[in-house]
Length: 266
Image 1 (spheres, rainbow, N blue to C red):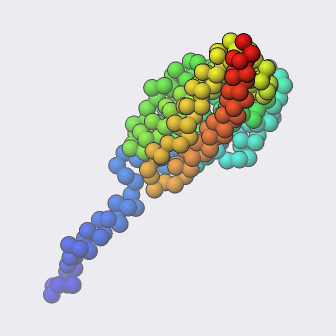
Image 2: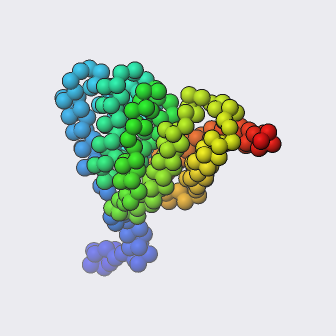
Image 3: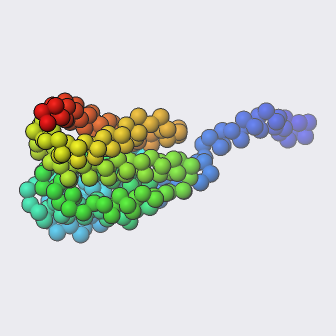
């Protein structure tokens, strides 16, 4: 305090106050959390209001909440609801579920929503019912082509996550090409029964999926952010990818001795 009662602020104290203020406020270009939260609540309200049946309402609400703007991975209870829906053996139910995923991937421009939708898609392809996979495999190329140039440059963090989304899409595309072309999901021992020509046709596609999966699953270029939940979302996706890499590698381990066997038989 000065002689006239005024307060003096030393440069060190001023810089400390500035650091505290900058730490408390969002970084330049970071999205504000209030508006996305409001949008999520509005979308949940719309889902409840416009659903034609109680079952559709349950699926709509679970999908909106699983792909909301929260940074973290989708909540397990919403994923389980969607997995139950993906196990229903009716074409109409599966076409509707696929349409929800397709709409999010084609229309959303926000990286968190797109990343969470891809995670939901990946989970349903891995653990959902046969009819869901068949319905999705009928036409998926346009989705991954659309996301091949995806970019959310709202901030540095969204730009980093966008880079991961493009790599993740490349893997999912290759995964879908492999499993939609060759029925390994229903015939796990398929490789042990193929001839040389079939193996030479299938093994390169399998290897391409493995290579892309390793690139995505073992990448050390994680989202560099103090928002740990955003990094957790990417880590959750990488965990799914590495699970697929392990499965594909097991198929490759069965195919390799088989091709040696048929080579010497010929």
